[in-house]
Image (tube, rainbow, N blue to C red):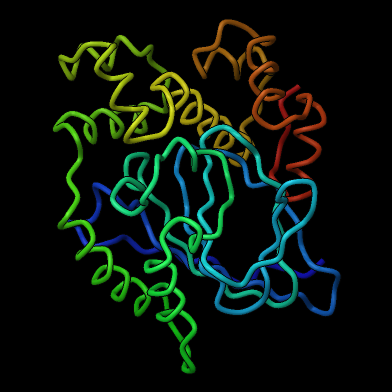
Length: 277
Protein backbone atom coordinates (compact mmCIF):
# COMPACT_ATOMS: atom_id res chain seq x y z
CA UNK A 1 0.00 0.00 0.00
CA UNK A 2 2.91 2.38 0.60
CA UNK A 3 2.84 5.36 2.93
CA UNK A 4 2.60 9.14 3.08
CA UNK A 5 6.11 10.48 3.66
CA UNK A 6 5.20 14.12 4.30
CA UNK A 7 2.50 16.74 3.92
CA UNK A 8 3.37 20.45 4.11
CA UNK A 9 1.22 23.56 3.70
CA UNK A 10 2.04 27.21 3.11
CA UNK A 11 -0.08 30.37 2.98
CA UNK A 12 -0.20 32.50 -0.17
CA UNK A 13 0.76 36.17 -0.34
CA UNK A 14 -1.79 38.26 1.63
CA UNK A 15 -3.03 39.91 -1.58
CA UNK A 16 -4.06 36.48 -2.91
CA UNK A 17 -5.91 35.23 0.16
CA UNK A 18 -9.32 36.32 -1.17
CA UNK A 19 -8.76 33.66 -3.83
CA UNK A 20 -6.29 31.08 -2.51
CA UNK A 21 -6.51 29.33 0.87
CA UNK A 22 -3.14 27.52 0.83
CA UNK A 23 -0.46 25.72 -1.15
CA UNK A 24 0.70 22.23 -0.22
CA UNK A 25 3.15 19.48 -1.06
CA UNK A 26 2.42 15.78 -0.52
CA UNK A 27 5.07 13.07 -0.89
CA UNK A 28 4.07 9.42 -1.08
CA UNK A 29 6.26 6.30 -1.32
CA UNK A 30 4.77 3.33 -3.16
CA UNK A 31 7.38 1.00 -1.60
CA UNK A 32 6.90 -1.51 -4.38
CA UNK A 33 3.20 -1.86 -3.68
CA UNK A 34 0.12 -1.67 -5.86
CA UNK A 35 -0.57 2.00 -5.38
CA UNK A 36 -2.81 3.87 -2.97
CA UNK A 37 -6.48 4.82 -3.28
CA UNK A 38 -8.64 6.91 -0.99
CA UNK A 39 -11.86 8.92 -0.88
CA UNK A 40 -11.44 12.64 -1.47
CA UNK A 41 -14.23 13.91 0.79
CA UNK A 42 -15.89 17.20 -0.26
CA UNK A 43 -15.16 20.23 1.91
CA UNK A 44 -16.30 23.24 -0.12
CA UNK A 45 -12.77 24.16 -1.22
CA UNK A 46 -11.79 23.35 -4.84
CA UNK A 47 -8.20 22.31 -5.57
CA UNK A 48 -5.75 22.23 -8.43
CA UNK A 49 -3.46 19.18 -8.27
CA UNK A 50 -0.09 19.45 -10.03
CA UNK A 51 1.73 16.07 -10.00
CA UNK A 52 5.50 16.42 -10.31
CA UNK A 53 6.32 12.74 -10.07
CA UNK A 54 4.11 9.64 -10.34
CA UNK A 55 0.59 9.33 -11.73
CA UNK A 56 -2.65 10.57 -10.21
CA UNK A 57 -5.64 8.26 -10.70
CA UNK A 58 -9.29 9.29 -10.75
CA UNK A 59 -12.66 8.06 -11.96
CA UNK A 60 -13.82 9.58 -15.23
CA UNK A 61 -16.96 8.44 -16.99
CA UNK A 62 -17.18 4.69 -16.53
CA UNK A 63 -13.44 4.07 -16.20
CA UNK A 64 -10.26 5.02 -14.42
CA UNK A 65 -8.04 7.80 -15.80
CA UNK A 66 -4.35 8.38 -15.12
CA UNK A 67 -2.82 11.82 -15.30
CA UNK A 68 0.50 13.54 -14.69
CA UNK A 69 -0.79 16.97 -15.75
CA UNK A 70 -2.57 19.65 -13.67
CA UNK A 71 -6.16 18.83 -12.64
CA UNK A 72 -9.05 20.83 -11.22
CA UNK A 73 -10.69 18.89 -8.39
CA UNK A 74 -14.12 20.24 -7.48
CA UNK A 75 -15.15 19.42 -3.91
CA UNK A 76 -18.56 20.95 -3.28
CA UNK A 77 -20.73 17.87 -2.69
CA UNK A 78 -19.30 14.79 -4.41
CA UNK A 79 -16.84 12.31 -2.90
CA UNK A 80 -14.18 11.33 -5.45
CA UNK A 81 -12.35 7.99 -5.43
CA UNK A 82 -8.74 8.87 -6.30
CA UNK A 83 -5.30 7.35 -5.93
CA UNK A 84 -1.56 7.38 -6.59
CA UNK A 85 0.32 5.07 -8.94
CA UNK A 86 4.02 4.82 -8.14
CA UNK A 87 6.04 7.16 -5.96
CA UNK A 88 4.22 10.48 -5.91
CA UNK A 89 5.24 14.10 -5.42
CA UNK A 90 2.12 16.22 -5.64
CA UNK A 91 1.92 20.00 -5.40
CA UNK A 92 -1.51 21.50 -4.79
CA UNK A 93 -3.41 24.76 -4.55
CA UNK A 94 -6.54 24.98 -2.39
CA UNK A 95 -8.86 27.81 -3.32
CA UNK A 96 -11.42 29.67 -1.29
CA UNK A 97 -15.01 28.99 -2.43
CA UNK A 98 -14.98 32.09 -4.66
CA UNK A 99 -11.36 31.71 -5.79
CA UNK A 100 -11.76 29.74 -9.01
CA UNK A 101 -13.54 32.63 -10.73
CA UNK A 102 -10.16 34.35 -10.88
CA UNK A 103 -8.81 31.49 -12.99
CA UNK A 104 -11.36 29.61 -15.06
CA UNK A 105 -12.79 30.54 -18.43
CA UNK A 106 -16.22 28.90 -18.04
CA UNK A 107 -18.92 28.68 -15.41
CA UNK A 108 -17.79 27.54 -11.98
CA UNK A 109 -20.95 25.45 -11.63
CA UNK A 110 -19.57 23.07 -14.28
CA UNK A 111 -16.47 22.49 -12.15
CA UNK A 112 -18.02 22.30 -8.70
CA UNK A 113 -18.05 18.50 -8.43
CA UNK A 114 -15.81 17.31 -11.25
CA UNK A 115 -12.22 16.26 -11.76
CA UNK A 116 -11.16 17.88 -15.02
CA UNK A 117 -7.73 18.28 -16.65
CA UNK A 118 -6.92 21.97 -16.31
CA UNK A 119 -5.88 22.05 -19.98
CA UNK A 120 -9.55 21.50 -20.94
CA UNK A 121 -10.50 24.65 -19.01
CA UNK A 122 -7.50 26.97 -19.40
CA UNK A 123 -4.68 25.69 -21.57
CA UNK A 124 -2.32 28.59 -20.90
CA UNK A 125 -2.65 28.25 -17.14
CA UNK A 126 -2.16 24.47 -17.33
CA UNK A 127 1.01 24.96 -19.37
CA UNK A 128 2.32 27.60 -16.97
CA UNK A 129 1.77 25.36 -13.92
CA UNK A 130 3.32 22.29 -15.54
CA UNK A 131 6.31 24.32 -16.70
CA UNK A 132 7.00 25.56 -13.19
CA UNK A 133 6.64 22.15 -11.54
CA UNK A 134 8.28 19.86 -14.12
CA UNK A 135 11.69 21.46 -13.77
CA UNK A 136 14.90 19.36 -13.77
CA UNK A 137 16.01 20.47 -10.30
CA UNK A 138 14.39 19.71 -6.94
CA UNK A 139 11.48 21.95 -5.99
CA UNK A 140 10.60 22.95 -2.43
CA UNK A 141 7.18 24.08 -1.26
CA UNK A 142 8.60 27.54 -0.55
CA UNK A 143 9.86 27.85 -4.14
CA UNK A 144 6.54 26.59 -5.50
CA UNK A 145 4.60 29.08 -3.36
CA UNK A 146 6.78 31.97 -4.50
CA UNK A 147 6.28 30.99 -8.13
CA UNK A 148 2.51 30.60 -7.70
CA UNK A 149 2.25 33.97 -5.93
CA UNK A 150 3.87 35.61 -8.94
CA UNK A 151 1.71 33.73 -11.46
CA UNK A 152 -1.64 34.13 -9.73
CA UNK A 153 -0.84 37.67 -8.65
CA UNK A 154 -0.88 38.74 -12.29
CA UNK A 155 -4.11 36.85 -12.96
CA UNK A 156 -5.86 38.25 -9.90
CA UNK A 157 -5.13 41.83 -10.99
CA UNK A 158 -7.67 41.37 -13.78
CA UNK A 159 -10.36 39.78 -11.61
CA UNK A 160 -12.38 41.24 -8.81
CA UNK A 161 -15.08 39.59 -6.74
CA UNK A 162 -18.54 40.60 -7.91
CA UNK A 163 -19.49 42.12 -4.56
CA UNK A 164 -17.73 43.40 -1.47
CA UNK A 165 -19.75 41.13 0.84
CA UNK A 166 -18.98 37.77 -0.81
CA UNK A 167 -15.56 37.09 0.72
CA UNK A 168 -16.57 38.20 4.26
CA UNK A 169 -19.70 36.03 4.00
CA UNK A 170 -17.87 32.86 2.91
CA UNK A 171 -15.21 33.49 5.57
CA UNK A 172 -17.91 33.81 8.24
CA UNK A 173 -19.56 30.63 7.00
CA UNK A 174 -16.28 28.77 7.25
CA UNK A 175 -15.26 30.15 10.65
CA UNK A 176 -18.67 29.19 12.10
CA UNK A 177 -18.42 25.68 10.56
CA UNK A 178 -21.67 26.33 8.69
CA UNK A 179 -23.67 25.84 11.87
CA UNK A 180 -25.98 28.84 11.48
CA UNK A 181 -28.95 29.16 9.06
CA UNK A 182 -28.56 31.14 5.84
CA UNK A 183 -30.59 34.01 7.29
CA UNK A 184 -27.93 34.59 9.96
CA UNK A 185 -25.33 35.43 7.30
CA UNK A 186 -27.76 37.50 5.24
CA UNK A 187 -28.50 39.74 8.21
CA UNK A 188 -24.82 40.35 8.94
CA UNK A 189 -24.01 41.20 5.34
CA UNK A 190 -27.27 43.18 4.87
CA UNK A 191 -28.06 41.56 1.54
CA UNK A 192 -31.15 39.87 0.12
CA UNK A 193 -31.49 36.11 -0.26
CA UNK A 194 -32.18 36.46 -4.00
CA UNK A 195 -28.99 38.46 -4.55
CA UNK A 196 -26.93 35.96 -2.56
CA UNK A 197 -28.33 33.03 -4.55
CA UNK A 198 -27.48 34.77 -7.84
CA UNK A 199 -23.92 35.64 -6.86
CA UNK A 200 -23.17 32.24 -5.32
CA UNK A 201 -24.24 30.47 -8.50
CA UNK A 202 -21.80 32.55 -10.57
CA UNK A 203 -18.88 33.00 -8.17
CA UNK A 204 -18.97 29.85 -6.01
CA UNK A 205 -20.79 27.29 -8.13
CA UNK A 206 -23.43 26.24 -5.60
CA UNK A 207 -26.20 27.59 -3.39
CA UNK A 208 -25.22 29.14 -0.03
CA UNK A 209 -27.06 26.36 1.84
CA UNK A 210 -24.95 23.76 0.03
CA UNK A 211 -21.71 25.47 1.05
CA UNK A 212 -22.90 25.62 4.66
CA UNK A 213 -23.59 21.87 4.58
CA UNK A 214 -20.06 21.18 3.35
CA UNK A 215 -18.43 23.37 6.02
CA UNK A 216 -20.52 21.56 8.62
CA UNK A 217 -19.44 18.19 7.23
CA UNK A 218 -15.81 19.34 7.36
CA UNK A 219 -16.34 20.05 11.05
CA UNK A 220 -17.76 16.53 11.43
CA UNK A 221 -14.58 15.07 9.89
CA UNK A 222 -12.44 17.16 12.25
CA UNK A 223 -14.34 15.76 15.25
CA UNK A 224 -13.86 12.19 13.95
CA UNK A 225 -10.15 12.84 13.47
CA UNK A 226 -9.79 14.16 17.01
CA UNK A 227 -11.12 10.92 18.50
CA UNK A 228 -13.67 12.75 20.63
CA UNK A 229 -15.95 10.24 22.33
CA UNK A 230 -19.72 10.43 22.28
CA UNK A 231 -22.85 9.07 20.62
CA UNK A 232 -24.17 9.98 17.21
CA UNK A 233 -26.97 11.84 18.96
CA UNK A 234 -24.45 14.01 20.86
CA UNK A 235 -22.47 14.59 17.69
CA UNK A 236 -25.61 15.60 15.78
CA UNK A 237 -26.46 18.13 18.50
CA UNK A 238 -22.94 19.61 18.35
CA UNK A 239 -23.37 20.04 14.59
CA UNK A 240 -26.76 21.78 15.04
CA UNK A 241 -28.62 18.91 13.40
CA UNK A 242 -32.11 17.94 14.44
CA UNK A 243 -31.31 14.37 15.48
CA UNK A 244 -29.19 11.28 14.84
CA UNK A 245 -31.21 10.41 11.71
CA UNK A 246 -30.38 13.83 10.22
CA UNK A 247 -26.65 13.19 10.68
CA UNK A 248 -26.92 9.66 9.28
CA UNK A 249 -28.71 11.04 6.22
CA UNK A 250 -25.95 13.62 5.63
CA UNK A 251 -23.21 11.01 5.93
CA UNK A 252 -25.00 8.76 3.42
CA UNK A 253 -25.79 11.62 1.06
CA UNK A 254 -22.23 12.98 0.92
CA UNK A 255 -20.09 9.84 1.19
CA UNK A 256 -22.36 7.05 -0.04
CA UNK A 257 -21.77 5.12 3.21
CA UNK A 258 -24.05 4.32 6.11
CA UNK A 259 -22.58 5.74 9.36
CA UNK A 260 -21.15 2.43 10.59
CA UNK A 261 -19.60 1.74 7.17
CA UNK A 262 -18.18 5.26 6.99
CA UNK A 263 -16.50 5.10 10.40
CA UNK A 264 -14.97 1.73 9.54
CA UNK A 265 -13.77 3.14 6.23
CA UNK A 266 -12.05 6.24 7.59
CA UNK A 267 -10.51 4.22 10.41
CA UNK A 268 -8.94 1.72 8.00
CA UNK A 269 -7.95 4.35 5.42
CA UNK A 270 -6.70 7.22 7.58
CA UNK A 271 -6.41 5.65 11.03
CA UNK A 272 -8.76 8.14 12.71
CA UNK A 273 -9.17 7.25 16.37
CA UNK A 274 -12.50 6.74 18.07
CA UNK A 275 -15.92 6.02 16.69
CA UNK A 276 -19.24 7.47 17.82
CA UNK A 277 -21.65 4.81 19.03
